[in-house]
Image (cartoon, rainbow, N blue to C red; front, side, top):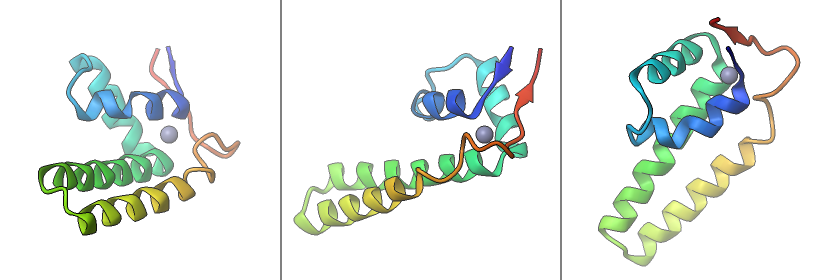
Length: 93
Ligand SMILES: [Zn+2]
């Protein structure tokens, strides 16, 4: 079964919330080791999620602003990369 970057990004939220089977988590970890695009994507998503969690825990306007700008920054970067032709796909049978 071929694991592509598109799949990795689709599964990112479920992965971070622990909703995926262990085998799938392992495949994701492997992919992140060989794929800089996805590793960056996961790292940024993790930061956005952390910011969202702290804004939810303490919903002051400045926290919401920080979250909004961080998310915007993250989103702006997403157009560039993950499904590019030079990208290493991982084929794990
Ligand atoms: Zn990837």
